[in-house]
Length: 84
Length: 167
Image 1 (spheres, one colour):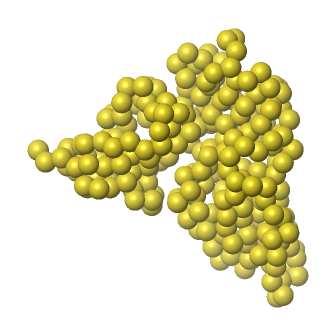
Image 2: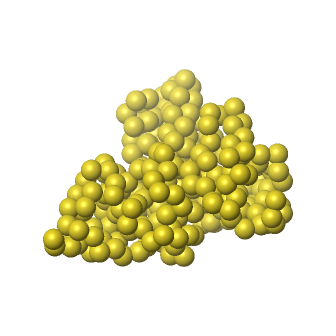
């Protein structure tokens, strides 16, 4: 199956766990955004499933977990927010 | 006007940006770093934003408030370290009348807190740090489960705790 190379943007505790704010992943073509969590390196995944309330962005716009990834995409894992 | 700022917020600029000669009322909200969190003394807060999307989201919120209330909005949020007592977020909203100005200001701060991709890390006086982002650290999970102070503002995100002195 063809693969795509995507950039994953990480923030807050995920960024700290990864030691970097962005990692590159090689994934099967059309992997849904919501499946990226399962492909993160073990130290970054603090649990088997993404935390409740996780949202996703694709190329800096909100997207749904089912959106398929294409080569060169930038996907962001948006943990539950706490600004203000 | 929407902004993310790593230096102290310029409130005069914010008010000016929300000012409109057709508008008779202007309301500001300023959120500041509290001295205590979960009944523990706080040294500082650290804010991290997903900048590209946070700016878009703040702009969307400002436009929604403008459309709903006929208001003019200015919104700014700090990034990086914000010592206790300093403003971390500020909203200015003007409208033709007072009720719409209050409503627009309230709408913007509530939506910002719920939607904007910005995260807060609490650095306690004892050196322990806690991200409020829904994750939990395996080592310190017990403390994190006992956390969630509530503060009368509905449920807070689960905390992920790192570093600091062992419990």
